[in-house]
Length: 120
Image (cartoon, rainbow, N blue to C red; front, side, top):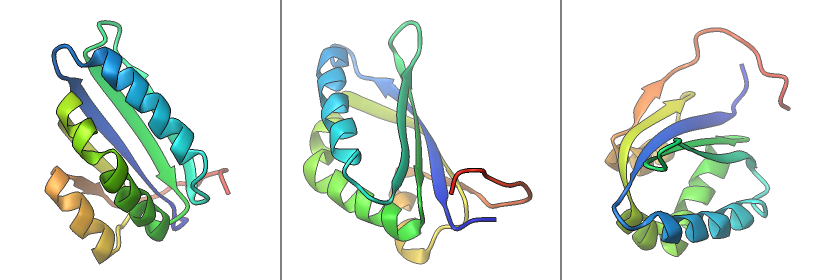
């Protein structure tokens, strides 16, 4: 299996924050487009606009670390005021450095078992 790493995050939108979250999310998506190691950066929202589902995939743990460091510096405080993290599931075997960043988010790690990806 590849060295790619991905995660799924479930976020509860804080009351009154949906419009601000939409604006910030647009800004974050545009920024992520410029990150060479970011393969997938997608957000989905429930029909009632209360839960945001995040799916991200990176070429490797180093790219994920680079993304998270930039995210925290630029968006972390504002983002944290708009959502409550409900679930953070990581798919792959993270490096120690990446795990140190993700552990405070309450991440659960799901290690590879079998399969393949057509994404290169």
